[in-house]
Image (tube, rainbow, N blue to C red; front, side, top):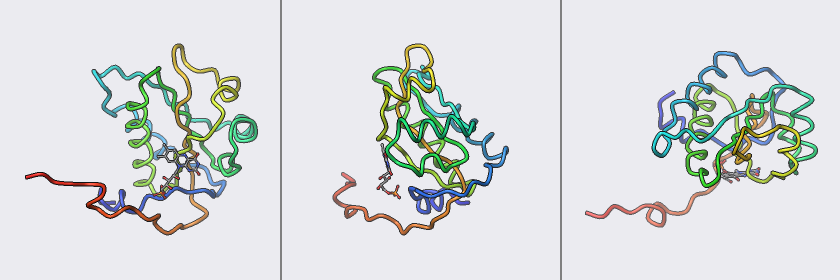
Length: 158
Ligand SMILES: Cc1cc2nc3c(=O)[nH]c(=O)nc-3n(C[C@H](O)[C@H](O)[C@H](O)COP(=O)(O)O)c2cc1C
């Protein structure tokens, strides 16, 4: 897929088939995460791809307020160090766009109970959970959400 097609076809997906994510696609996502740029190359993050069904169910039920999260065959949990959310966001976008290019659906999920999630998956030393990303084959094909006019969001100063 052309890069700009990846950008323009990505959607937040809130319904997933139970089909497994191909190993090759998971490998590409792992590579994309690892190659993400970070400030001073500190790499202050860890991404845990949760395939274990019982763990995914527990996270969806106890830590999330959104049932679709438990449907996806993989739930990525992005952990980062304090004040490293910028870095974590870049890492997450690498992951999401790579999944899109592989024909998979994803959704950024920021609304979850961090305290509860930390009791289900122990965070790496000095880190806390930042973002969740369910990953799987989309069950839906949502239309593009509206965006503000270009000149409200972007300006070129010559
Ligand atoms: C940081 C962040 C957190 C988000 N958290 C949630 C969430 O908790 N639940 C959800 O359904 N969507 C969540 N979204 C998805 C947005 O609602 C979505 O990206 C936006 O409506 C634009 O739609 P699109 O992704 O299909 O272009 C989040 C997106 C971002 C970037």
